[in-house]
Length: 218
Image 1 (cartoon, rainbow, N blue to C red):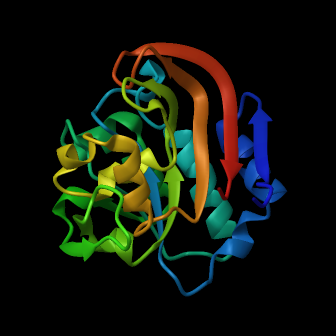
Image 2 (image 1 turned 90 degrees about the vertical axis):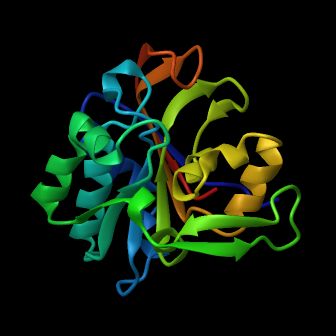
């Protein structure tokens, strides 16, 4: 197995931490100027990021700023919340302000056109309805660093549940179905928000101050 290059940055300025991490791994080289980039945070509900449940808007802003400064301008921030109105979750976290400030599109993937896709060599999931934007974009997964009742931790790959409908179909045989899902929509890049981590489980609201950003391709 090839070694993975991962940047781990600790600090007190999330935007600059993200940019430093992405510079370290030369992240801009993985995208073409003509392709759409989907920045996919985790907004399972409309909890504020300080609760340890959802993605910090400053981490998303660091990604968008990095991409824009590298001349990569075809950017959409998109999520399909499972337990809340997605746009309300964006507003609670401040993502709407990030999108406005940097003039990028903001999308509720639950309202996107969905495509029924066949999984090649499936382990547990033969077909899945996936948001068309996710299928047609280079994806940057931006999960929250937190624990999960079924998966142990919920990070870059499980974050892809936000692009499917219905989302509940993924939970039985979870690990196999995540593997099947990412055979169709594998993130090109992951940036993990560990500014405020989450203890207990994915909705526990037991925040842990960590002040970390982790970035890598695998």
